[in-house]
Amino acid sequence: MAGSSNSTPPGTKAASQQGFVYLPLIVGWLVPGAGHFLLRKWGRGILLALAIFSMFALGIAMQGEVYSSAHDILEMLGMVGDLGSGLLYIVSRVLGLGVESAQVTTADYGTRFIVVAGLLNVIAAVDAHNLRTGRKPL
Amino acid sequence: MFSPSHFTAVLLFALCASVVFGITMRETPRRMLRYGIYCFVLFVGSVIVLSWGMYLIAR
Image: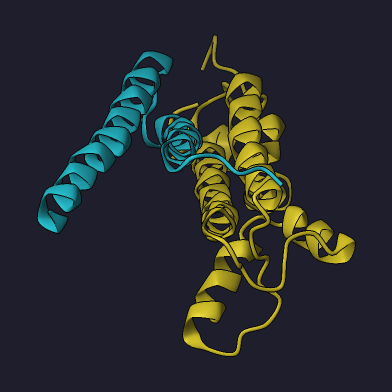
């Protein structure tokens, strides 16, 4: 047909399904906000990265616990939450950040901050995946 | 060691969580901002209401 083009307009579902669709999900999980950076959503990516990095750093600064073992169900759930932070969790384990067990009230808050930072990062990574697949408009 | 007061910890938690909720749960920047503010107010408001409730129960 005259006037038609083979190139797919950006932002359409067909365009968003080209390539490896799980890349923003994986990159977004490993580095907070990076999934949105891949999709050139700079503003959203910076805000997400700031919020998640800040929450994780505040948790560490409050001497929160970074779960390293899963002896009971609560520790297991905490570790799953921590793992949501991706590389932040791995780096904090390698550097020995956080404490073995929370001793004071603010340290207990810090532990929750670290867990919730991981959970929020999972939400952000899934959002990047939804943008990539076209489930959420770009 | 960073030792915020309980209320400061609530404000920091609410701020970070509201930013993520606002961006991920809505589609346009204006609606993101409104939803983020809504979440922040709900977080902080519910903490204040529950705190007063526990204070009155404990008396």
